[in-house]
Image (cartoon, rainbow, N blue to C red; front, side, top):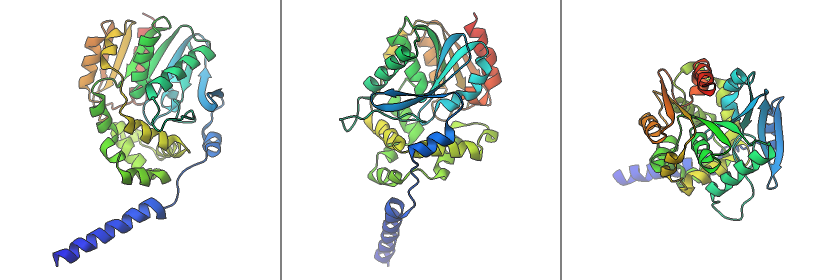
Length: 313
């Protein structure tokens, strides 16, 4: 009897596996479709290493570079952009392999992501003629922001971090992405046909504190960006690569720094806020209640007030 039950369960699992991997609809979207659907009036596309990368530019004044987090896009900063671009020139970028930006063709199976992104930011600073700026980053974008500050201390005059990555990265990546499952053969095979929107909504529940922000429109946009041809492959590759920056570099940040954190962040624990504050000597820390992983999206008016105070000090 038990053998029959076990056999039945195995057969069911095998059928589900075959359907998930081969039988279900391919959700991958063409780059052209996603580009036309989500490009903005101020979208700009430029060539980098034979691929197309996307950014937006708005306003006038001293430049601010805004860098989104893992799985996100420059749209995560669109509200804060609108609240600051009457005083500053704002650049919102899509990192290579996210949003509307391609990842450059690599000969290696697993690229050296640290070198690729260092080269990307050097290219951006040069191409956009940015020799002095403020930098803001969320999550993975926060990690890239403080690293950019360390690599280009003469360029970055002030730094703003939103729930930044940087410490205990293997643990953080596991919490954020369930990496051990994403690395499995089944997940790799399943996600070749794209991400179902219900999984995207599950991810939004982890990122956002307020239910009012978990809209169908936002879930669909996240889902479309993840399913844009090439994006999911890069996301999976980055998770599997286990390439992490040396967290000791955080202590080398010298410019004035404002650290934001959402008290109810389920992606990067709030305990790391105090570590950033301790390691970056010239820093301030603001902890928001009723807020999760993306304060600039969840508390934009409060962020505007606090950022303007910091930038004009």
